[in-house]
Image 1 (cartoon, helix red, strand yellow):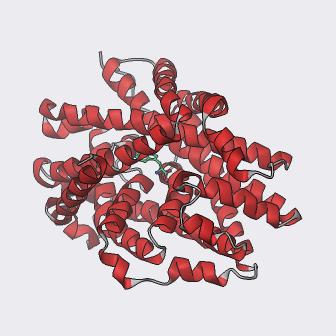
Image 2 (cartoon, protein in one colour):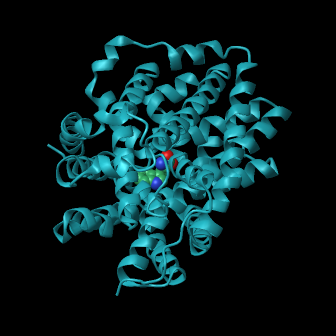
Length: 441
Ligand code: TRP
């Protein structure tokens, strides 16, 4: 029974933009971006990631915005609106991605809360690796994961205006200031030069490396929250007269800026403190790279390190929260639109289900790593592939929807053509490579 209440709308233009930026900016920009950059050799990864974001990510982001605003529905309804009910299964795939991603994302978010509290109390134990293991798996990981899900449910229950928008409007500027402050601080450290070189000096040989290209593509999608209807759902709460192309540019640019500036903090910090061998060789395990080396970094800085450490982990929590609520919103909105549930009931029941699904990831880093690979490189890339084909070939007049509110702008004229051939082509190649890497044999 579809709900017949009028659909809620964002209170302001800035509110929508900050919520979308809040969704994009998260653990992906800091934890995932820095471990992938470290693993994939630094600057070459950065260059590929920027290129894919512009040529593939941006067109798909605009596609999600157009589908969401044009239909005023969450993913399943949006696809059926433009493509007929035969497209509903793709919407189900999106919702499944939401369950999958949030189930382990919340586990990592739980670690960050635990780290932020530990930093606040100034009590990281000497053995950073052992501490990470205790935090990252087992009972502690499980407890903080469940706690984090409770907070997400509480915010999403409040709805888009009172819950999500208000949270994002306060927390996103704070996060940005924290990350910029950290990068400035890192620049004052002696020995940080090697960090800048690692991060910014491109090794051209690596630009053609398949595993680096694949990692960069997965990261572009994960970081922009694309490929599962998340941005679509947020755009469904928009009024007609927004300039979607400019807004997608702003969101993509902010997302990139936070990742880039976080890198300007993380790499100089790591090199200044001589932790580079450890992090770039991956001997601590890529998942834990950030969580093991940074507290160590902060500890070696003395008094200032205490403050910087608190700021850093608080920033991580903020990013994680505004992203996690966007994932929960997709499933919640789907249940509200499709099953006619109340928002309170949908958020609570879906949140509980996701919390339970996250238990295996909380108990095993291996499971968590596998989920992350599966989600980023297969579900999101596959979802974005079908989405670009859908908008490029199936939707009757995608340009008409994008032009509403952007009549005088022409730079996005190429958009539909990008979605028709180049974007699906790149995504199809990446998807095949990812499946081969994931499946044994
Ligand atoms: N983009 C967020 C981050 O970087 C994570 C995220 C939120 C996400 N919603 C998403 C990833 C939807 C993929 C799809 O942390």
